[in-house]
Amino acid sequence: MSILVLRIKKSWFDEIASGKKTFEFRADTPRYSKVFDRPYKYAIFHYQKKRRLLCRVNRVEKLPNELSGPARRLVATSLVWRIELGTPIVLELPTELLTRLLLGLV
Image 1 (cartoon, rainbow, N blue to C red):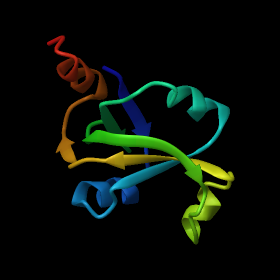
Image 2 (tube, rainbow, N blue to C red):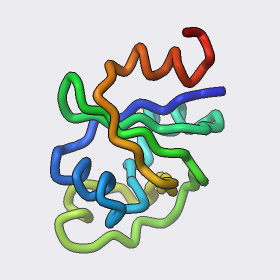
Image 3 (cartoon, rainbow, N blue to C red):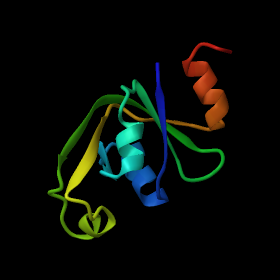
Image 4 (spheres, rainbow, N blue to C red):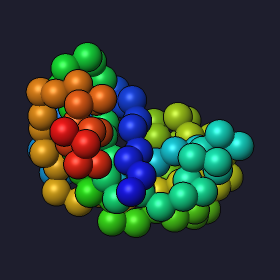
């Protein structure tokens, strides 16, 4: 099982935590093409050392970039990776410990 770990801005963290934001986007770059080359069951989002947001990854797909407004300026590529997220859980655990728990290593 692979676990995706992504750093995001606090404003996006809060929106995902509240359930308002159910998708995360990443530009279609060589780095993210390699990252999304495998399936993920969970995503861990963070913006600081202790608070973590755990979400189930429902789907990851590459789509034409139809973002608008400020989001379009942040992701300026013609294609984007869209990560569909499940119900978020906010945790106060370091990423390493959370990953080990999810993998059943603790």
